[in-house]
Image (cartoon, rainbow, N blue to C red; front, side):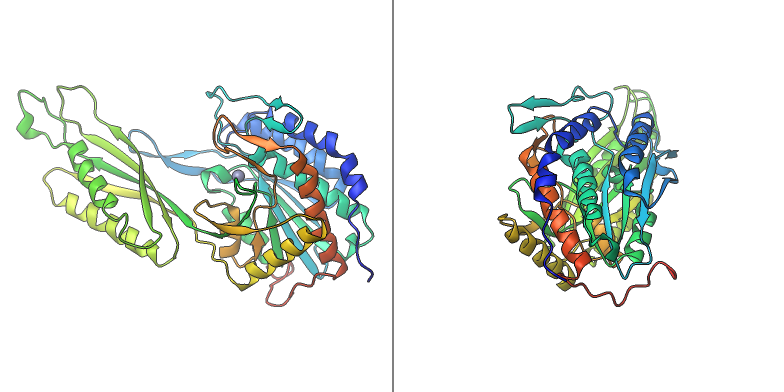
Length: 414
Ligand SMILES: [Zn+2]
Protein backbone atom coordinates (compact mmCIF):
# COMPACT_ATOMS: atom_id res chain seq x y z
CA UNK A 1 0.00 0.00 0.00
CA UNK A 2 1.30 3.44 -0.84
CA UNK A 3 2.36 5.80 1.86
CA UNK A 4 -0.47 7.41 3.80
CA UNK A 5 -0.79 11.19 3.99
CA UNK A 6 -2.55 12.72 6.99
CA UNK A 7 -5.44 15.05 6.04
CA UNK A 8 -3.55 18.06 7.36
CA UNK A 9 -5.72 20.69 5.67
CA UNK A 10 -8.91 19.09 6.91
CA UNK A 11 -7.53 18.92 10.48
CA UNK A 12 -6.47 22.58 10.30
CA UNK A 13 -10.01 23.42 9.22
CA UNK A 14 -11.29 21.87 12.48
CA UNK A 15 -9.23 24.14 14.77
CA UNK A 16 -12.04 26.51 15.71
CA UNK A 17 -14.55 23.72 16.24
CA UNK A 18 -12.07 21.87 18.46
CA UNK A 19 -11.42 24.89 20.63
CA UNK A 20 -15.15 25.51 21.01
CA UNK A 21 -15.72 21.87 21.96
CA UNK A 22 -13.03 22.06 24.65
CA UNK A 23 -14.60 25.24 26.02
CA UNK A 24 -18.10 23.78 25.98
CA UNK A 25 -17.07 20.57 27.72
CA UNK A 26 -14.70 22.24 30.22
CA UNK A 27 -17.45 24.64 31.26
CA UNK A 28 -19.55 21.68 32.39
CA UNK A 29 -18.48 20.60 35.86
CA UNK A 30 -17.80 16.88 35.69
CA UNK A 31 -16.03 16.21 38.97
CA UNK A 32 -15.82 12.47 39.61
CA UNK A 33 -18.69 12.63 42.13
CA UNK A 34 -20.89 15.09 40.23
CA UNK A 35 -23.24 12.55 38.68
CA UNK A 36 -25.44 15.21 37.14
CA UNK A 37 -22.52 16.86 35.33
CA UNK A 38 -21.17 13.48 34.25
CA UNK A 39 -24.64 12.68 32.89
CA UNK A 40 -24.52 15.87 30.79
CA UNK A 41 -21.13 14.80 29.48
CA UNK A 42 -22.55 11.34 28.62
CA UNK A 43 -25.17 12.96 26.42
CA UNK A 44 -22.77 15.41 24.73
CA UNK A 45 -20.13 12.76 24.11
CA UNK A 46 -22.68 10.31 22.73
CA UNK A 47 -23.80 12.98 20.25
CA UNK A 48 -20.24 13.91 19.31
CA UNK A 49 -19.01 10.35 18.76
CA UNK A 50 -22.12 8.80 17.18
CA UNK A 51 -21.33 9.97 13.60
CA UNK A 52 -18.26 7.70 13.75
CA UNK A 53 -20.52 4.66 13.78
CA UNK A 54 -19.73 1.53 15.70
CA UNK A 55 -21.57 0.01 18.60
CA UNK A 56 -22.05 2.63 21.33
CA UNK A 57 -23.23 2.04 24.87
CA UNK A 58 -23.26 3.72 28.25
CA UNK A 59 -22.16 1.34 30.96
CA UNK A 60 -23.19 1.62 34.63
CA UNK A 61 -20.31 1.18 37.04
CA UNK A 62 -20.51 -0.47 40.47
CA UNK A 63 -20.24 1.98 43.39
CA UNK A 64 -16.87 2.66 44.96
CA UNK A 65 -16.12 2.13 48.63
CA UNK A 66 -14.84 4.94 50.79
CA UNK A 67 -14.11 5.27 54.49
CA UNK A 68 -16.15 8.17 55.84
CA UNK A 69 -15.13 10.49 58.67
CA UNK A 70 -16.75 8.19 61.22
CA UNK A 71 -14.49 5.35 60.03
CA UNK A 72 -17.36 3.45 58.36
CA UNK A 73 -17.16 1.84 54.93
CA UNK A 74 -19.76 3.49 52.69
CA UNK A 75 -20.69 3.01 49.03
CA UNK A 76 -20.59 6.00 46.72
CA UNK A 77 -22.19 5.88 43.26
CA UNK A 78 -20.12 6.53 40.14
CA UNK A 79 -21.02 7.93 36.73
CA UNK A 80 -21.35 5.87 33.56
CA UNK A 81 -18.64 4.96 31.08
CA UNK A 82 -19.08 5.48 27.33
CA UNK A 83 -17.96 2.57 25.18
CA UNK A 84 -17.77 2.44 21.38
CA UNK A 85 -16.57 -0.57 19.43
CA UNK A 86 -16.01 -0.38 15.68
CA UNK A 87 -14.97 -3.23 13.38
CA UNK A 88 -14.34 -5.74 16.18
CA UNK A 89 -13.44 -8.42 13.64
CA UNK A 90 -10.58 -6.46 12.07
CA UNK A 91 -7.18 -8.13 12.21
CA UNK A 92 -5.67 -5.14 14.01
CA UNK A 93 -7.59 -3.59 16.90
CA UNK A 94 -6.56 -0.38 18.64
CA UNK A 95 -7.83 0.89 21.97
CA UNK A 96 -8.30 4.62 22.54
CA UNK A 97 -9.32 6.00 25.90
CA UNK A 98 -9.47 8.96 28.22
CA UNK A 99 -11.56 10.11 31.16
CA UNK A 100 -14.42 12.60 31.32
CA UNK A 101 -14.12 13.36 35.05
CA UNK A 102 -12.07 16.16 36.58
CA UNK A 103 -10.67 16.90 40.04
CA UNK A 104 -12.61 20.15 40.44
CA UNK A 105 -15.61 19.79 42.74
CA UNK A 106 -18.70 21.99 42.55
CA UNK A 107 -17.55 23.76 45.73
CA UNK A 108 -14.41 25.15 44.08
CA UNK A 109 -14.21 28.61 42.50
CA UNK A 110 -12.47 27.33 39.34
CA UNK A 111 -15.45 26.49 37.12
CA UNK A 112 -15.14 28.26 33.78
CA UNK A 113 -12.71 28.69 30.93
CA UNK A 114 -10.95 31.89 29.99
CA UNK A 115 -9.00 32.64 26.81
CA UNK A 116 -5.62 34.19 27.56
CA UNK A 117 -4.76 35.77 24.23
CA UNK A 118 -4.86 33.52 21.20
CA UNK A 119 -2.42 30.90 22.44
CA UNK A 120 -3.75 29.74 25.77
CA UNK A 121 -7.00 28.55 27.27
CA UNK A 122 -7.23 28.39 31.04
CA UNK A 123 -9.94 26.34 32.70
CA UNK A 124 -10.90 23.26 34.68
CA UNK A 125 -9.98 20.13 32.77
CA UNK A 126 -8.86 21.99 29.62
CA UNK A 127 -5.71 19.86 29.52
CA UNK A 128 -6.69 16.99 31.82
CA UNK A 129 -8.53 15.81 29.92
CA UNK A 130 -11.45 17.44 28.09
CA UNK A 131 -9.16 18.39 25.21
CA UNK A 132 -7.85 14.82 25.15
CA UNK A 133 -11.40 13.69 24.35
CA UNK A 134 -11.51 16.24 21.51
CA UNK A 135 -8.14 15.11 20.12
CA UNK A 136 -9.27 11.47 20.22
CA UNK A 137 -12.58 12.33 18.51
CA UNK A 138 -11.09 14.36 15.66
CA UNK A 139 -8.24 11.88 15.10
CA UNK A 140 -10.84 9.13 14.70
CA UNK A 141 -12.86 11.34 12.35
CA UNK A 142 -9.71 11.83 10.26
CA UNK A 143 -9.10 8.07 10.21
CA UNK A 144 -12.69 7.32 9.23
CA UNK A 145 -12.49 9.85 6.37
CA UNK A 146 -9.46 8.02 4.97
CA UNK A 147 -9.52 4.99 2.70
CA UNK A 148 -7.46 2.87 5.08
CA UNK A 149 -10.03 2.95 7.90
CA UNK A 150 -11.56 -0.38 6.86
CA UNK A 151 -8.35 -2.20 7.76
CA UNK A 152 -8.44 -1.32 11.42
CA UNK A 153 -10.82 -1.96 14.30
CA UNK A 154 -10.96 0.41 17.23
CA UNK A 155 -12.49 0.63 20.66
CA UNK A 156 -13.09 3.78 22.69
CA UNK A 157 -13.67 3.93 26.44
CA UNK A 158 -14.34 7.25 28.17
CA UNK A 159 -14.57 6.64 31.89
CA UNK A 160 -16.02 8.86 34.66
CA UNK A 161 -13.80 7.80 37.57
CA UNK A 162 -10.13 8.01 36.51
CA UNK A 163 -9.33 10.83 38.91
CA UNK A 164 -10.40 8.49 41.72
CA UNK A 165 -8.09 5.73 40.45
CA UNK A 166 -10.73 4.15 38.16
CA UNK A 167 -12.30 2.10 40.99
CA UNK A 168 -15.38 1.20 38.92
CA UNK A 169 -13.97 1.19 35.40
CA UNK A 170 -10.83 -0.90 35.94
CA UNK A 171 -12.66 -4.15 35.02
CA UNK A 172 -13.75 -2.48 31.74
CA UNK A 173 -10.18 -1.36 31.04
CA UNK A 174 -8.99 -4.92 31.59
CA UNK A 175 -11.54 -6.20 29.05
CA UNK A 176 -10.40 -3.52 26.59
CA UNK A 177 -6.79 -4.60 27.13
CA UNK A 178 -7.72 -8.16 26.23
CA UNK A 179 -9.69 -7.25 23.11
CA UNK A 180 -7.10 -4.97 21.51
CA UNK A 181 -3.51 -5.16 20.33
CA UNK A 182 -2.25 -1.75 21.38
CA UNK A 183 -3.61 1.36 22.98
CA UNK A 184 -3.48 5.12 23.14
CA UNK A 185 -4.61 7.16 26.13
CA UNK A 186 -5.14 10.88 25.65
CA UNK A 187 -3.80 12.27 28.90
CA UNK A 188 -1.93 15.56 28.46
CA UNK A 189 1.81 15.43 27.88
CA UNK A 190 4.11 16.12 30.82
CA UNK A 191 4.59 19.83 31.56
CA UNK A 192 7.71 20.10 29.36
CA UNK A 193 5.89 18.56 26.38
CA UNK A 194 7.50 15.14 26.67
CA UNK A 195 5.52 11.91 26.79
CA UNK A 196 5.40 9.59 29.78
CA UNK A 197 7.62 6.52 29.46
CA UNK A 198 7.93 4.56 32.66
CA UNK A 199 5.32 5.33 35.33
CA UNK A 200 5.35 4.56 39.01
CA UNK A 201 2.62 2.55 40.69
CA UNK A 202 0.20 4.04 43.19
CA UNK A 203 -1.87 2.85 46.13
CA UNK A 204 -4.27 4.54 48.53
CA UNK A 205 -4.78 3.41 52.11
CA UNK A 206 -6.80 4.46 55.13
CA UNK A 207 -5.92 3.48 58.68
CA UNK A 208 -8.79 3.75 61.18
CA UNK A 209 -7.78 3.82 64.85
CA UNK A 210 -10.36 3.53 67.61
CA UNK A 211 -9.60 4.15 71.28
CA UNK A 212 -11.84 4.99 74.21
CA UNK A 213 -13.14 8.41 75.17
CA UNK A 214 -13.06 9.73 78.72
CA UNK A 215 -13.26 13.05 80.52
CA UNK A 216 -9.86 14.69 80.20
CA UNK A 217 -9.96 15.97 83.77
CA UNK A 218 -11.94 13.52 85.85
CA UNK A 219 -11.10 10.20 84.23
CA UNK A 220 -8.14 10.70 81.92
CA UNK A 221 -6.74 7.33 83.03
CA UNK A 222 -9.82 5.53 81.66
CA UNK A 223 -9.34 6.93 78.18
CA UNK A 224 -7.36 5.50 75.33
CA UNK A 225 -6.17 8.19 72.95
CA UNK A 226 -6.79 7.35 69.28
CA UNK A 227 -4.82 10.39 68.09
CA UNK A 228 -1.58 9.56 69.90
CA UNK A 229 -1.90 5.97 68.68
CA UNK A 230 -2.34 7.31 65.15
CA UNK A 231 0.75 9.48 65.60
CA UNK A 232 2.67 6.22 66.09
CA UNK A 233 1.15 4.84 62.89
CA UNK A 234 2.23 7.94 61.00
CA UNK A 235 5.80 7.93 62.33
CA UNK A 236 6.25 4.27 61.52
CA UNK A 237 4.91 4.63 57.98
CA UNK A 238 6.89 7.81 57.34
CA UNK A 239 10.05 6.02 58.46
CA UNK A 240 9.77 3.82 55.34
CA UNK A 241 10.57 6.89 53.19
CA UNK A 242 14.12 6.86 51.94
CA UNK A 243 14.71 3.21 52.77
CA UNK A 244 13.68 1.62 49.46
CA UNK A 245 14.61 3.02 46.04
CA UNK A 246 11.57 4.69 44.46
CA UNK A 247 9.14 3.89 47.29
CA UNK A 248 7.47 6.88 48.95
CA UNK A 249 4.61 7.17 51.42
CA UNK A 250 2.73 10.44 51.61
CA UNK A 251 0.67 10.85 54.77
CA UNK A 252 -1.98 13.01 53.15
CA UNK A 253 -4.79 13.52 55.61
CA UNK A 254 -5.47 13.02 59.30
CA UNK A 255 -8.79 13.53 60.99
CA UNK A 256 -10.17 12.84 64.42
CA UNK A 257 -10.63 14.22 67.85
CA UNK A 258 -13.13 16.68 69.26
CA UNK A 259 -13.64 18.72 72.41
CA UNK A 260 -10.46 19.61 74.28
CA UNK A 261 -11.74 18.12 77.52
CA UNK A 262 -12.31 14.69 76.02
CA UNK A 263 -9.84 11.89 75.24
CA UNK A 264 -10.41 11.28 71.52
CA UNK A 265 -11.75 7.86 70.57
CA UNK A 266 -11.36 7.99 66.79
CA UNK A 267 -8.64 9.03 64.36
CA UNK A 268 -8.31 8.34 60.65
CA UNK A 269 -5.16 8.62 58.60
CA UNK A 270 -5.16 8.56 54.79
CA UNK A 271 -2.06 8.01 52.72
CA UNK A 272 -0.79 7.52 49.20
CA UNK A 273 2.03 5.19 48.21
CA UNK A 274 4.15 5.54 45.03
CA UNK A 275 6.57 2.83 44.02
CA UNK A 276 8.71 1.55 41.16
CA UNK A 277 8.48 -2.16 41.58
CA UNK A 278 5.53 -4.49 42.20
CA UNK A 279 7.57 -6.30 44.85
CA UNK A 280 7.47 -3.15 46.97
CA UNK A 281 3.73 -3.66 47.48
CA UNK A 282 4.58 -6.38 50.00
CA UNK A 283 6.77 -4.03 52.04
CA UNK A 284 3.89 -1.61 52.53
CA UNK A 285 1.28 -4.27 53.18
CA UNK A 286 3.32 -6.12 55.77
CA UNK A 287 4.18 -2.85 57.52
CA UNK A 288 0.47 -2.00 57.73
CA UNK A 289 -0.26 -5.47 59.14
CA UNK A 290 2.53 -5.08 61.68
CA UNK A 291 1.39 -1.63 62.80
CA UNK A 292 -2.20 -2.78 63.27
CA UNK A 293 -1.03 -5.84 65.22
CA UNK A 294 1.12 -3.69 67.52
CA UNK A 295 -1.74 -1.29 68.19
CA UNK A 296 -4.12 -4.14 68.97
CA UNK A 297 -1.74 -5.25 71.72
CA UNK A 298 -2.33 -1.94 73.48
CA UNK A 299 -5.09 -1.56 75.95
CA UNK A 300 -8.40 -0.50 74.38
CA UNK A 301 -7.05 0.36 70.94
CA UNK A 302 -8.49 -1.19 67.83
CA UNK A 303 -7.12 -0.50 64.39
CA UNK A 304 -7.81 -1.57 60.83
CA UNK A 305 -6.51 -0.63 57.43
CA UNK A 306 -8.41 -0.35 54.15
CA UNK A 307 -7.45 0.29 50.57
CA UNK A 308 -4.97 -1.16 48.16
CA UNK A 309 -2.81 -0.62 45.12
CA UNK A 310 -4.92 1.00 42.40
CA UNK A 311 -2.35 1.35 39.64
CA UNK A 312 0.52 -1.11 39.17
CA UNK A 313 3.86 0.35 37.99
CA UNK A 314 4.13 0.75 34.22
CA UNK A 315 7.62 -0.32 33.19
CA UNK A 316 9.24 0.88 29.99
CA UNK A 317 9.27 -2.65 28.60
CA UNK A 318 10.08 -3.71 25.07
CA UNK A 319 6.54 -3.43 23.58
CA UNK A 320 5.99 -0.02 25.21
CA UNK A 321 9.34 1.23 23.92
CA UNK A 322 8.54 -0.13 20.47
CA UNK A 323 5.25 1.75 20.44
CA UNK A 324 6.87 4.97 21.69
CA UNK A 325 9.37 4.68 18.84
CA UNK A 326 6.50 4.46 16.34
CA UNK A 327 4.93 7.54 17.95
CA UNK A 328 8.25 9.40 17.74
CA UNK A 329 8.70 8.37 14.12
CA UNK A 330 5.25 9.70 13.17
CA UNK A 331 6.09 12.90 15.04
CA UNK A 332 9.25 13.34 12.96
CA UNK A 333 7.17 12.98 9.77
CA UNK A 334 5.20 16.00 10.98
CA UNK A 335 8.23 17.96 12.18
CA UNK A 336 7.41 17.30 15.84
CA UNK A 337 10.23 16.29 18.15
CA UNK A 338 8.98 13.56 20.49
CA UNK A 339 10.80 12.66 23.69
CA UNK A 340 9.72 10.71 26.74
CA UNK A 341 10.75 10.38 30.35
CA UNK A 342 9.63 8.61 33.49
CA UNK A 343 7.09 10.08 35.87
CA UNK A 344 5.66 9.45 39.32
CA UNK A 345 2.16 10.16 38.02
CA UNK A 346 -0.20 7.31 37.26
CA UNK A 347 -3.14 6.95 34.87
CA UNK A 348 -5.19 4.32 33.09
CA UNK A 349 -2.10 3.56 30.99
CA UNK A 350 -0.75 1.78 34.09
CA UNK A 351 -3.89 -0.36 34.38
CA UNK A 352 -3.96 -1.22 30.67
CA UNK A 353 -0.27 -2.15 30.66
CA UNK A 354 -0.75 -4.35 33.73
CA UNK A 355 -3.54 -6.13 31.83
CA UNK A 356 -1.14 -6.77 28.93
CA UNK A 357 -1.90 -3.90 26.54
CA UNK A 358 1.16 -1.99 25.28
CA UNK A 359 0.13 1.66 25.26
CA UNK A 360 1.29 5.25 25.00
CA UNK A 361 -0.77 7.24 27.47
CA UNK A 362 0.13 10.88 26.85
CA UNK A 363 -1.38 11.35 23.40
CA UNK A 364 -3.36 14.39 24.58
CA UNK A 365 -2.50 18.07 24.42
CA UNK A 366 0.35 20.17 25.68
CA UNK A 367 -0.54 22.34 28.65
CA UNK A 368 0.22 22.52 32.30
CA UNK A 369 -0.63 23.22 35.95
CA UNK A 370 -3.12 20.37 35.88
CA UNK A 371 -5.07 19.72 39.10
CA UNK A 372 -4.67 23.42 40.01
CA UNK A 373 -6.70 26.62 39.44
CA UNK A 374 -4.14 27.60 36.80
CA UNK A 375 -4.65 24.61 34.51
CA UNK A 376 -4.11 25.64 30.92
CA UNK A 377 -4.10 24.28 27.40
CA UNK A 378 -1.75 25.45 24.64
CA UNK A 379 -4.34 25.88 21.89
CA UNK A 380 -2.05 25.13 18.93
CA UNK A 381 -1.40 21.67 20.38
CA UNK A 382 -4.98 20.62 19.59
CA UNK A 383 -4.42 20.36 15.84
CA UNK A 384 -0.81 19.28 16.31
CA UNK A 385 -1.83 16.31 18.45
CA UNK A 386 -4.72 15.35 16.15
CA UNK A 387 -2.36 15.25 13.16
CA UNK A 388 0.03 13.12 15.14
CA UNK A 389 -2.60 10.65 16.35
CA UNK A 390 -4.35 10.52 12.97
CA UNK A 391 -1.12 9.78 11.12
CA UNK A 392 -0.29 7.06 13.60
CA UNK A 393 -3.72 5.44 13.25
CA UNK A 394 -3.57 5.67 9.46
CA UNK A 395 -0.09 4.14 9.33
CA UNK A 396 -1.23 1.31 11.56
CA UNK A 397 -4.37 0.76 9.46
CA UNK A 398 -2.40 0.76 6.20
CA UNK A 399 0.19 -1.67 7.52
CA UNK A 400 2.93 0.90 7.03
CA UNK A 401 3.56 0.55 10.73
CA UNK A 402 3.27 -3.09 11.67
CA UNK A 403 2.30 -4.41 15.03
CA UNK A 404 2.41 -8.02 16.19
CA UNK A 405 -1.09 -9.46 16.48
CA UNK A 406 -0.08 -12.69 18.13
CA UNK A 407 -0.64 -13.44 21.77
CA UNK A 408 -3.99 -11.70 21.85
CA UNK A 409 -7.11 -13.53 22.87
CA UNK A 410 -9.27 -11.51 20.48
CA UNK A 411 -12.85 -10.36 20.86
CA UNK A 412 -14.47 -13.74 20.35
CA UNK A 413 -12.83 -15.54 23.24
CA UNK A 414 -12.24 -12.72 25.70
ZN1 LIG B 1 -6.12 12.84 33.52
